[in-house]
Image 1 (cartoon, helix red, strand yellow):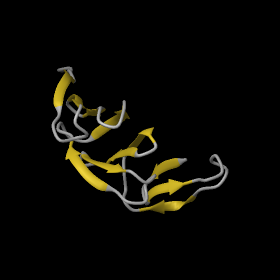
Image 2: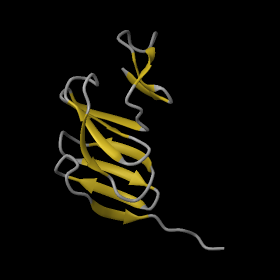
Image 3: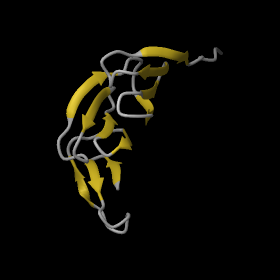
Length: 108
């Protein structure tokens, strides 16, 4: 089990009873659809992938649209990221993103 913290990713091997303190990198959101496809996005929208459960992370792309608000990895290549200005989708593990839904801003 993994959890995001201000210090980095905290890990638990006993179902969440105990966690090791957070370790770099710092991610805002995580999504883990397959054993070899753990995704994390940081506060700047940098999408990273780990194939070994979070030990080693490699950059896989950058989500457009400002600070991420949510992350869902549908499978090893299909990821959806909600950001400040919309919802973006990649089907190639972060190489390219398409805007799927803009965020409407209410005027005053």
